[in-house]
Amino acid sequence: MRTALRFPLAISGLAAMLIAAPFSAYADLAKGKELFSQRCSMCHGESGAGDGPVAASLPPDIKPRNLQLAEMKFATDDAKLTQLLKNGGGGVGLNPLMPPQPDLNDADLASVISFVHTLKK
Image (cartoon, rainbow, N blue to C red):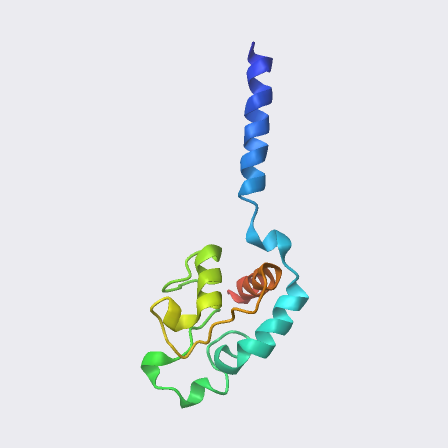
């Protein structure tokens, strides 16, 4: 009887793992780095420190976030980071200067997010 119970539990566990597969499983880090460089680095800087060329001209209260730090005000997980990227800062109650990226498909979003995770120190 124990063996009979293990099989359904194993299948349900496997199904749960597949459903909750990390967003990064679909990511292409090279593509993420390229997209970040094109779309994000002007404010966040190439290394994600929040020191891009545009950041220098912004008041301190609306400086871009330092993505090297683990602390995030809104994007506490990949789902929220996806929402932030798609809707922009203003779309989630943050800095309206962060533009939305509605043209990025799910694979591109996963790639950017995975790259951003590599910036954390």
